[in-house]
Amino acid sequence: MNTHYVKAMLLLCLWVCSGGAMADDHSSNGITLGPVVPDFGPVMLPPAGAYNLDPNTHFKVSIDIGETAEFPGDLNRKLVSVARFLNMNAQYGVPAENIEFSVVVHGMAANDFLTDAAHARRLNDPNPNTALLDQLNAAGVKVYLCSQTAAFHQMAADEFRPDVIMALSAMSAHVRLQQEGYSLIPF
Image 1 (spheres, rainbow, N blue to C red):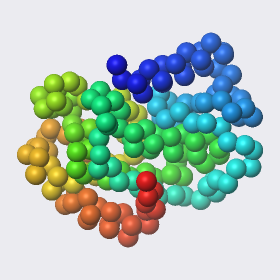
Image 2: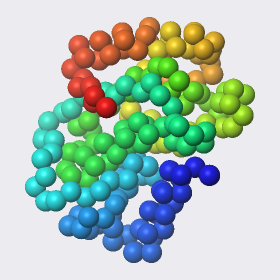
Image 3: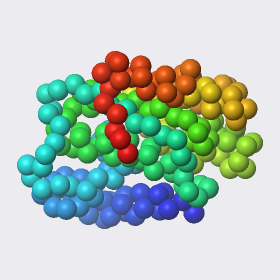
Image 4: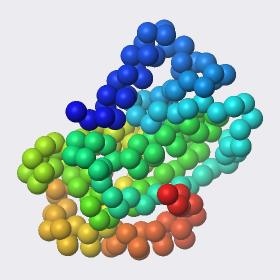
C-alpha cells in the first residue's frame, strides 16, 4: 500500500473528524492540506511571524527531479515537496498567482511522468503519481523532461503525460529557467 496515500487519508480523516478545524486553526502546530494542491503536500503550521516570502512579490521557482520513489507504488517525494511549497506559501499569504513553479525531470524520475498506460506497460502498475500530477498541472506547475533521458531509456514522447514539455536536456532547461529568473530550490 502507498504510504503517502495512507498518510494523506489519515490527515483527511482527522480533518473531517475535527469539523475542518485543522485547516482553519493557524495558531496550533497542526497539519493542513491545500489550498493550491488540495489532496497532497501536508504542511506543518509554523509560529506566527516566521521568516517567509513577501506576499507582494512575484516568484519564479524551479526544482530538479532525477530520482523516483524508493518503493514501487509510492509518490515521488520531490513532487510532494512541490505541493508542500505551493500550499504552505498560499496558507501564509502568498497569492497562488504570485508563484510560477517549474519542474525539471531527468534520470529515473522520468518513469513518474509516464501516462498510466505507459507506466503499466513498463512497470506493471499504473502511475502512482497521476492524481498528484493532475493537481500540480491544475495549479499551473510546468514540467520539463530531459529528452536525452527519454532517448536513453527508449521512451517515446507519446508515453508521457500530455502536460510534460520536452526539453533538449535537463541541463539546458535549468540554464534557460535561470536566465528567465527562476530560483532553483537546491534540495
